[in-house]
Amino acid sequence: MKEFWKSKAAKILAVVAVLLIGLMIYAASTNGFSSIPASVTGVIITPLQNLWSAMTDGISGLFADLTANSRQIKDMQAEIDRLHELLADYDQRVEENKIYREFLGIKENNPDFQFTDGRVIASDPSDPYHNFTINAGSLKDVQPGDPVITAQGLVGTVYQVGPTWAKVRSILDPTMQISATVTRVSENCVTSGSVTLAQDGLLRAELLPRYSGAAVGDTLITSGISETYPAGLLIGNIVSVSLSSDGASTTAIISPYANFSSLSSVLVLISYSGKEG
Image (cartoon, helix red, strand yellow):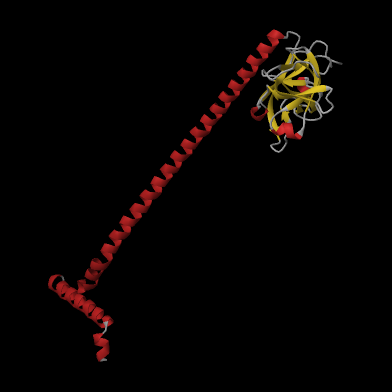
C-alpha cells in the first residue's frame, strides 16, 4: 500500500482530488452545492465545445477552399486544352501553307503536273528504308505507281492504296530502281538501294560509263526513259565515285535531296504528260 502512494498514479489521483475539492468549495461559496455539476460541466465541457467548434469551422473552410481550387484547376485545364487545340490548328495551317507553296513552285515549272497532297500518318522506326503511309488514297485519285515528291526532290512511289490512305516505298528501298541522268555530263544510269546504304540515308547509281566524267557534287534527276517517272525530278547529288567490280562501268553513291528522317508532308503526282495508262 505504501508503494501505491509513492507511485505516479497516486500523485495524479491526488491532484485530481484537490482540483475537485477546490471546485466544490468555489461552487458552494457562489451558487451552492446544486451548481457543482453545472460548474464541472462548464469548466470541462465548454472548452471542449469551443475547440470542436473551431475545428469544425476550420474543416468547413478547408473544404470550401478545396472546392474553389478544384474549380480553378478545371477552368485552367479547360483553357490549356483550348490553347492546345488552337496550337494544333495553327501548326496544321502552317504545314498546309508550306505544301501549297511547294505545290505552286513545282506547278509553275511543270504545268502538266497534277498533284494531291498527303501527310505522313505512319512509319516504322525499325524500317531502314523509311517507307511510310500517307492520309491520301483512291478517293483523291491516288493509284499504285504514282511518284511521291517534295519540293526537295523525289521521295518514292505509291505501292498500295486504300480509300483514304496509301503506302509509299522510298527510293532507298532495294526494290526501287529509277532511270536517272547525271545532269552535267548527260549520262544515264540506274539507281538502287541496299540496307547498308539506307542506314546512312544513301543509295547508289550504277551502269554509268567508265569514262562518263561524273564527279562528286553532280546532280541526278529522273531521265524520263521509263514512264514510271516524268523527266527532271530531282533525286540527289553524287558524294563519291568508283569503278564497278568488273571495271567496265562506274558506280556513284548518291545523297538524296529529300530528308527522310523529318518527312511530314508530301505531294503525290497523280497525272503528268506521258504517264503510262
